[in-house]
Image 1 (cartoon, rainbow, N blue to C red):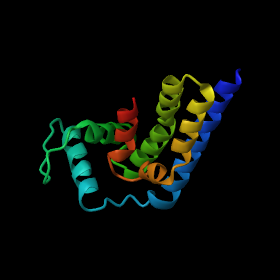
Image 2 (image 1 turned 90 degrees about the vertical axis):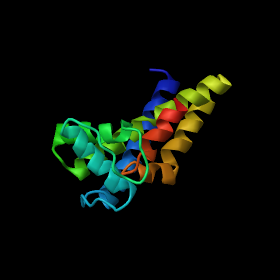
Image 3 (image 1 turned 120 degrees about the vertical axis):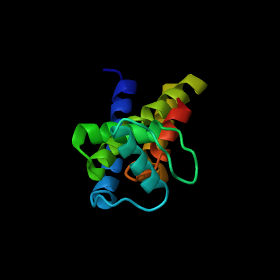
Image 4 (image 1 turned 45 degrees about the vertical axis):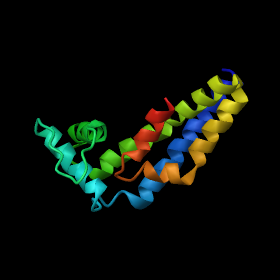
Length: 143
């Protein structure tokens, strides 16, 4: 295995570990915060019932509620389970930063550095275990 591949594995493991640690400390209660998280939660429940009805103050795209609905379908209507899945997915999502850095600068070391920054950037890591679409949106924007 090349040193670049080993570096990618280390970066992803660090990212998943940090996000899982945040999940352990802040997301296991299953509480749904008022505001955006509550609207995402209700939209996910609507999707599970076969429709999409967004009755919040803003019209939201259904991607994040669809992700939550998928997690609910897999693990039951469990906020901690859904957020653990989100934390792991957002940890794996630092690969997008590695690929972006590598493709922009055509250097593996720069790609690994950008992935490491994304893996250890606390605001991004903490959103991985909160009921906010930002955790997945940032990765989609980078892709």
